[in-house]
Length: 101
Image 1 (cartoon, helix red, strand yellow):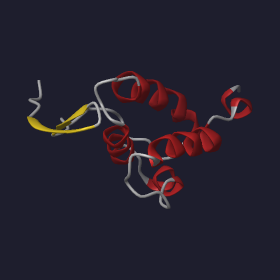
Image 2: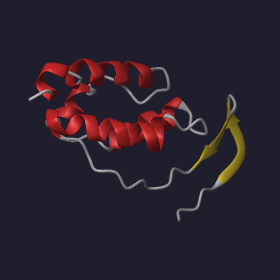
Image 3: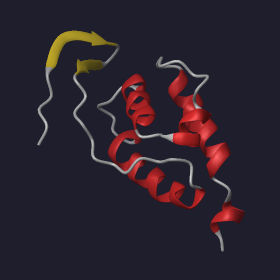
Image 4: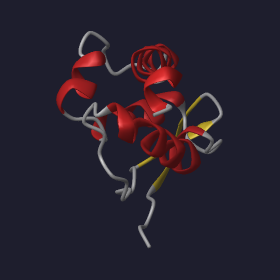
């Protein structure tokens, strides 16, 4: 179990927290691993209503390496860019024709 440190400072409806380390497999851009990564990330981070978009974006960037990381290289770590990052990754890796062998 990871401990979470809460503070009285909040942004919007979210409490500032020190993000615990998550154990997810990193995604390097190998398209056949995209679906598994996406499903794990969605369950652990994306669908977590207790995290702000900037926290989700921070997690997302930490799980990307190699060519997958370069997809988001032009996006700075700000809250508004999380949704854009998700769109860019889906456009790049959610190719159903490649996934059906």
